[in-house]
Length: 151
Image 1 (tube, rainbow, N blue to C red):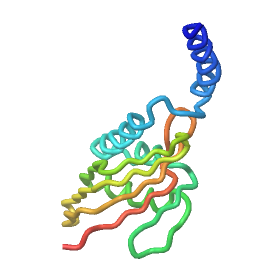
Image 2 (cartoon, rainbow, N blue to C red):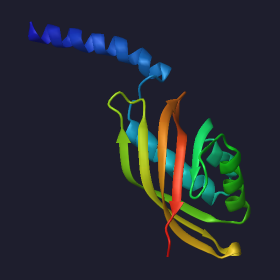
Image 3 (tube, rainbow, N blue to C red):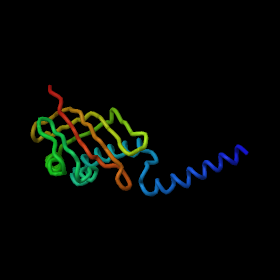
Image 4 (cartoon, helix red, strand yellow):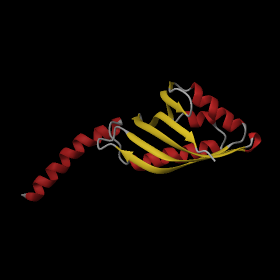
């Protein structure tokens, strides 16, 4: 009898979760997906591909840059990433803290940034904070806040 109830419970979970996973409403392994997003960011910078970096962002991303008001959209991120990639910059993110909501609909990623653009004499470290939401088959950055550490 217990085996029958367990199989029935499994069937109900599968019937409900299967279509949701397929539709992208819940994430199968959000931590792995978010770590992959960070890896894709680092790879895109190494490949000097600003468009690949921007593809990780939602069109209406909130951009919070040190010393400036928050703005919505990709204009400012595009300027920064095109500057970095066209000047052969080296930027790497590491993930220090990763929080995913219980329902898998929101994540916060906080990490360290190492940025070097030798052609302009920049060699800096900083901290970034992403707010991310599932979108289609993956996650998108919906808020990017960063600051550079002082020497």
